[in-house]
Length: 494
Image (cartoon, rainbow, N blue to C red; front, side, top):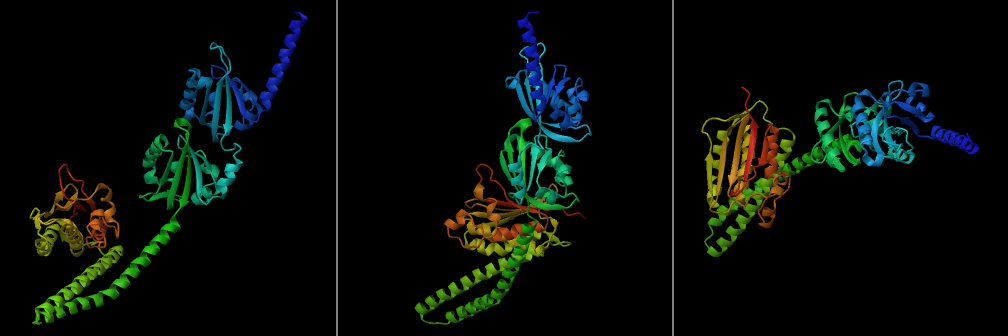
């Protein structure tokens, strides 16, 4: 060998040794793997991370560093890399397994080193996602009031802050690596898996507890209400979802106490108003009788108009007071009718009889369409009458002269139903749920200055729901005019 050749060998050995020293001293866990998936070389950080010596690892299969349950994911990464995806570099979130069997979340960066396709080497960098230097982020997580979790694309918990530990009763190491369904009530876990997958595939930000009550589960099995803000980063297998969880138990308790006090206040005020209003109505009726005896036609007409105004206003306020009292009674559970039987046929007959005069005065046709046979449901008949009264009163109020209001009832699969349909202006789609909110009034009522406080439909729905039923606005068929409200009640279990 020539001097220059010998110099080249020595230089090559020195460079190789230097490269190996740099490889060995890097902070990241690194390993080299051949196409046979056997480990060629590991550095000290890799030994420390996995708790295995270099002698144990070199020559063995790299899959020993991956949980058996995730071997298919590991194989998929290898095939992607060999297919040339990502320009010869693939980065994914996976899980590693230490020598003692403990699993931990990892970030794996794989790269083809050799330009030759015959015998390439794969460089693999493994980052421990539980100890990556995220001190600033971790410090922030520990200062917020919410319980914060980070979940990977497979649904396993990667990180949890101290507030989450306190909230759920688990130490962070007990949560990390477990499916997030650990924190979901047992009977909701299957559904949560589907929802989680749908969120990871589509959304980037979502707030849970918008309309629906969301609950979580502590280590001791206790269930508590929560509000959850979800934010996703990345896509597919690389996705990470940050969940900010707020325990709203105290908020719900305060809201419940506030509602109780509000109901009690309304009940007290309403009771105080009921007696004087009754006296005003009675006095107006007596005054009207006295006015009839006046001989002066001009004075008689003027006083008659005044007494009618007094009586009409007092009756309107009296009806409002009765509605407020009805709501407070429903809130106290007095409308459930547990153990009582009601016949929907009787309810239909009563409401048609009671509202017949008002309908005729308004130029409407009020009709009943029912089976004629008893339709028994478990409910308080007095309260059920009240609910149907509210529906019919609403229909009569909004249907123009010449129109029709129809009350029908019958049996359907699993229970009974009752509908009130009219030929009025109908209910816009965006209002079909809002009109059941207390003190809520539709655009037609506001524009037409129709009297009312927006309590009738909320009373009706509350009564029906207290009996285990539902009350909804039925979407109109093509060409159908007016509104149709349908209540369904559970069938009678005799």
